[in-house]
Amino acid sequence: MVNSFETAKEKLTAYLTETKKSKTIARYNVLKAVYEQKSCFTAEELYQQINANSKDRVCFATVYNTLLILQDCKLIVKYRLDNAVSQYYEVASETEYHHFIVCSECGAMRKFIDVRLQNTIRSKTFKGFKAQKHTLTIYGLCTACSRKKKKKG
Ligand SMILES: [Zn+2]
Image (cartoon, rainbow, N blue to C red; front, side, top):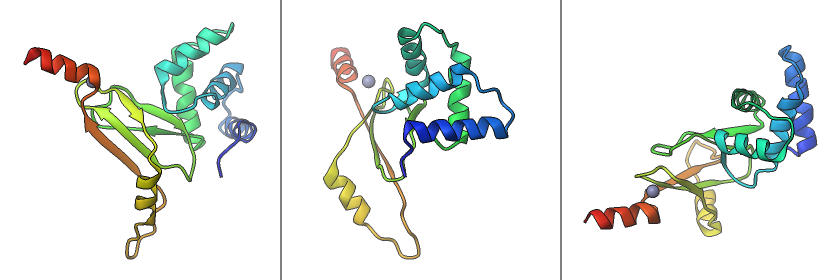
């Protein structure tokens, strides 16, 4: 089940109560911003967006710590991709499949959706193993980096 923002808020409140952490407005602002993301995001991107849209400034440490809390609550997931410049986060979902392209030079990352590929992998069965989800990362060169490489000869 994908968590709606309201469910996520309840989960966060329950977690903060249980762990005796304070229920600060900043933490809920971070959660709200997370749920406004359409795709993967970095802590830095989230931090900049929150402070661009809100009068109540949130410091980077709060954003980062709240992301750790949200991971503990299983509301978001973190991707560790080889070569990627940053750690990427995304709202957790059980059904979604994660396909990425990563530039081996600069580490820029993008998510892509390919329904045929998804269905092919989804239909794959393994003896004595039940697949639940998968991550696929394709490494290569982004346009900017391939241009740079061409210039260098
Ligand atoms: Zn690149």
